[in-house]
Image (cartoon, rainbow, N blue to C red; front, side, top):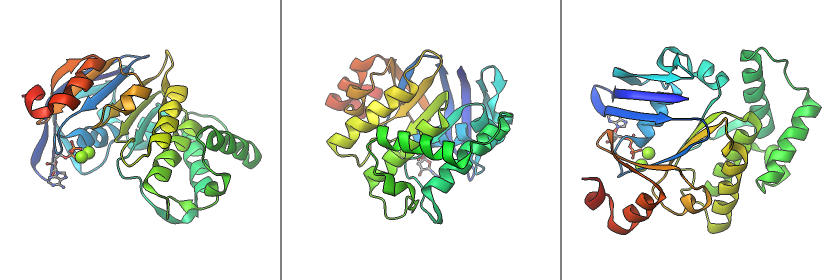
Length: 247
Ligand code: ADP
Ligand code: MG
Ligand code: MG
């Protein structure tokens, strides 16, 4: 599904990714762990197509197509979803308005008709329910005044509505209390644990991986994957630290 080969990327002339290689097949859950500043969020941004990042070497294909040649909205239309470490607040736009536009932009790109207001509300409400998010939050401006945990939950609601094929979730577990962590973990499983879908979980902690069992755990250090293992590697990392394990 996703094939990253020898990826090099820089920002403001500073090399961050230095030869990253990773293959993600349909049906797989990959966890990426690694020290601060290793380039984890950079990987997400490069895959999402954020402007400031320049790819200097290597390739990325999604279903065999050159992902790096695609505009961000084309990547989204192809089924890629990015969950951010720091979800943005958008004052002046209600959550439900935002979610509807996000979904309909994608449907349009796929040549599908937009959902009617009524059908959309039904979908949004069912997703909010599934994530234990208060319906009232659908009416509020996007993420404004939401707690850290509410923003992450909201992001999962968005993901449920969009129903992507490949999600890259950057520290979706940071700032979540234990109940929210379980709810978000259940959401990830419900939406993405399917034979035709895949997920890359960027996380610092093993706890999310107790809810969303990874098939592979990778260590990203200094811009490349330095180690790959199974779920046990996450436990080992938490016990021993990155210094000991990833060096
Ligand atoms: P991680 O998510 O693994 O903690 P990031 O991908 O966010 O790491 O950052 C990787 C490195 O890129 C860090 O050292 C960070 O300081 C650096 N970086 C990010 N943005 C810029 C920028 N605009 N200019 C220079 N360096 C940057
Ligand atoms: Mg970080
Ligand atoms: Mg980061």
